Image 1: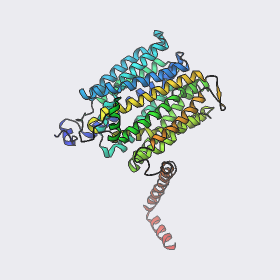
Image 2: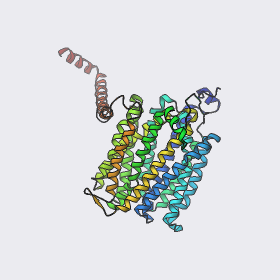
Image 3: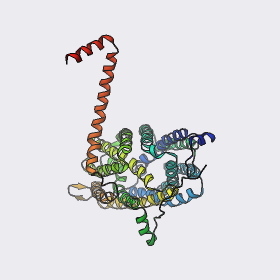
Image 4: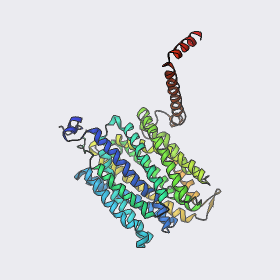
Length: 468
């Protein structure tokens, strides 16, 4: 079989694999892997607060996680060029889950916060080694014409699994943090069993202008000229992640410490937010196939800017719930479209390298944002600015910086074909109303169709039509 050709369905059958079977296992793997990671991501900060972490240490924790994610991209790309992408993912998942054992036992081992943060950073580094390899494998495995529908449905499944895992963990959290993290490790190993059954196709090769993103000043100009869209896209997401991570680690702190909503409300908000994400992902997946990922990014890039702004006026669990539903709606479309656009902008034969470079710069922005947010959280702990105080000042700064990052977004070619506000109006108002009206039409049509099954009803409708 030629190296530059994706294996056909017959080829898969010869290898005791089929394309559909691999895609199903990719979904099953995503279900358990997401359930495992959602438990860790959702309750790591509450766990750190339980262990006595300060606002500055929460900022440092998030910064170290972003730093680990960032510096894992380059060795992850290097490993993907020399080893099987499946082997890298399996090795990283096993080693990362094993390292979580001392983290789980932190209260019994009496680990200090510094040791806790270091262990979290190392586990995150090992897990992030899989990023470039997994993106490359998914890009080669999923046909291009099916990406919008497939990833939209996949996000629906993994969102549902995350919802169930978050709800169950929210109940079990009253027993102990080690219990829910132990469940997370078990789910992670189940995900590995499904990932083993995924077929790994050969890396697809096609001609593209070669470029590189590096610190070599001579290569920067040629990199921009060869693939300007990817460079601008990377710059845009770097600034956006800087602004987002300035505030995002402190949302849980704001809920649990400032508003004292309690673990029950915290878990309920996480669950409903996950449910909103489940509902929204298929919707954005369909719109992505119809209108293209660039327009989805343009619309949701505006929406995600207002998440910290709405937090400025949140003073109760109900307010927070409404903000989180809005956040889920905006981020579900934004994340789906940015991932799809990244696959479109990266050459297939060098995807692991380019994805690693892309995520490296994004991680730098996220790390710096988290560090600055931690410093600001301690500096403005008792300060007041424009009627806002403490963590609210960070939310205000994050809102302004997110809006500023949109200046880079509009430089990406394709964003200017239709004004962002036009598609924003369509995605929020026109398409949902159209879906509801179509559902009502089909509901009414099915009712009439059932009535026409009765011969007397058919005569009645014929007479009524004749009279009209």
